[in-house]
Length: 203
Image 1 (spheres, rainbow, N blue to C red):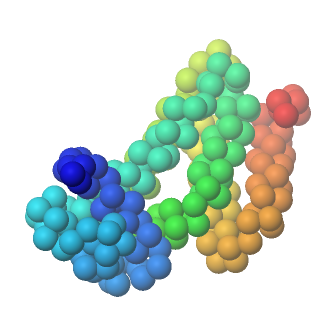
Image 2: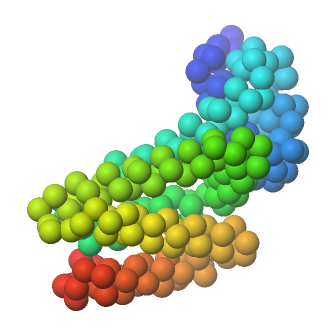
Image 3: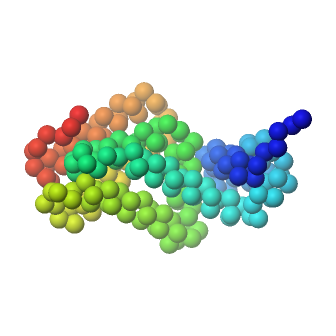
């Protein structure tokens, strides 16, 4: 007797399938038929789980945001501001490196949201930045750091992580990307040393 698959599991399957299809075909090419085929399900099941493609994409956005929140959850802010910043950058880069499809879909989704919905694309990015700032503020609780400095560190982390993501997305060279992670982390270390002083950063 075939095992019954729950609606929650089916939704998860469709979200993962949508990431793969968006990465390969872009938003415009991410038809419900292609997504259903990628999920190895029939189209009727997809429409049973989701009233529209927009509803599915909303869950894909939530999935992408959740992946970044998982990175933040794994950070130990008690290790100090510098090491926390370094953990954040490394964690985001590792999240991208873990899946080329996730990286491609994330870039495509943010670009599409900015084009089609304006403020929604900005809101997604703002939310991610505020999550980073919150962790940095917690890490700096016992350090004399101005709020503006926290904003700058968050911006530098986002800029370096975005640059890494675009390079990894463009070339798809995992060996090179692994080396680039170390180079990118060293850029952050140098900036932190220049901005906060030359105290050593934990390896």
